[in-house]
Length: 414
Ligand SMILES: [Zn+2]
Image 1 (cartoon, rainbow, N blue to C red):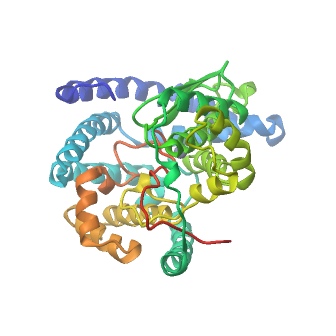
Image 2: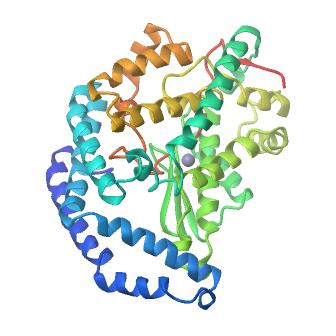
């Protein structure tokens, strides 16, 4: 779909609907259901722990699939393609009204799906289960409330007493081929297995691939900024290590699938943030950088690199450019919007207005910043993620990928 010409969205949607129908027939085959029933009724000691988990997960998926009529599965597939095309157009033209009607349809079809799968649970929870098994909005409310209560005052404190640091040396002219070679070296040092995976360049970083023995990850490089490519590569290496670590003994079985989006992201962020932005890692990285860019980094110490990488920026209104402190607020806002849309407390038309209000109240954004961001970023920022027709766990973007250019950036000593 990345390479699809915009005029092909209609025919592509029809193809996807036909394929969805073929898949539907296989996934809801009554014979499969009958076999699962036999296995579910098997004596407790006749299956080992892994076999029991396979039956549990397969039965769970079977129930979800058979709850939906074939016609609905096909309509979902078709709408997904049409909504994606509208989102791309809205993003290009910075015009939310292009995407809004499709988003409305998507919300309605999602509600229809959720009610058929489990009418006893909140719609949001039923849909969330596809991404985070067993997670509930009640639990997310608790977690996000706690995170926001801690972050908003922290951002204010950083603004008022943070120490300004000079990291102008991080901006320069860095050959992208050398950057790619450096990132490959780092990925290999972190354990990425190149006999079962590749690292390539693309506009949007992501990790994908057909199998744990064939893991494809990409990153992007900017000539003027070394850190973006590096953090991106470390982040994607985290995803790739999770994929390559899946147990081939259970190949093809449900228990061998990636557990959830949250678990996947926990691995990429563990490597990107906990390892990649630590002092010991800066000490490891400095010689590798100096070997490739000796002039630009001649007088830079590992401590300076560590500080520069951990700078807290003025709030960015673009999620993928946000730093560690403001990033969670972007996620919380998206969660609250999509929950409100599904529960009917937020009309689709109000999304841009609420977005702007919350950007001001949570992130301290000014009207000028919002207008500037509206011109630069995608309308997709208004597209909810868990119910969004165009997002899965990839392509994803490193937590902090913005060029550290702003002079007002600060760091707090810990
Ligand atoms: Zn990620």
